[in-house]
Length: 409
Image 1: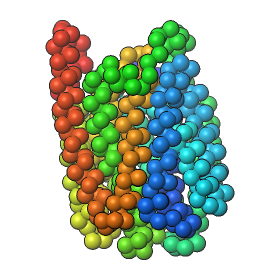
Image 2: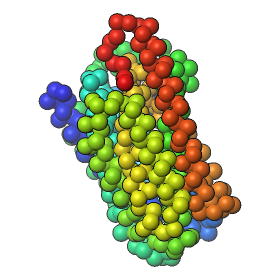
Image 3: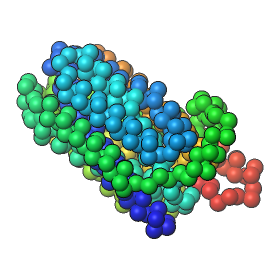
């Protein structure tokens, strides 16, 4: 990788860490805030799902805009929107205000797709999985430290926890991330590249999925895996709160274990395993780890005994996320990479909408471990999707012979 690209990637890494840290601080706190307002588990998880519902609507739009106008304007706009949502959350005094704050945060969440597209812009095909792994690691660090910091700032009390301070800290971090983009991150797309996008026929997210069968199968695979991840995210705090009367601090520290493993896999494991296994096999490894981890959490009888399952989930996230993103980016051309990755994010966003609406009701009706068991079984189906994607990829490579050198093992 060229020195200039490496410098930009390092700057992007720190921007993503700071930005996602602000989001991660609030992750374990929303269920406790909703519970203080009188919400039941069946209502708490849909409030969490509202974030991803609006992210689903906004992500492809932000991706396409970043193709046309550049990555930096979208990063700045989405981060300022996140700051506004955190300030609104800081003043929330009812469930409707909490719902509005989470919905605004979701719609303005164009930063992840833009960051992934930025990393893809400055990378060659050979380095793309590694670069996306770096961005994934930055996101993982934000999620690793954020919940722990948020839990410490909020405290351990179930009633009377401090939610104002974490929200204000998150808003301040968003402002810091904006300043870093302004002064440290150069634009990755030239004026000519943006002009090329303007001359191209615009493709909707569904038309991209129709035209690119490999992308379609990859999107379905990430939907299934993310369904498992979102089930854990949306019900773990409720599980700890209602079953063991555990507060935000302990939940945040437990989630720290999962994120620490995921970051280690993304920063060290992916770099070494992709050349040996290939992105498809590494994705299958991640799927297997997620399924086993969720089943282990379902069978655990305490937060401490759930830690081995969280470790497996961390390995799964660290292996699958950068592999799936890299495979999706191979389906893009220079002019539509943001749109393709935005379309790929449909799977992630849709799963994060569906899982909270399903998991809360299952939790309330069938018991605390039921959502985790269901999520583990759902995740296993992603292996078939990855197999279908690889077969389509190989068939296309054979049809387009001689190979361009991008085929995956």
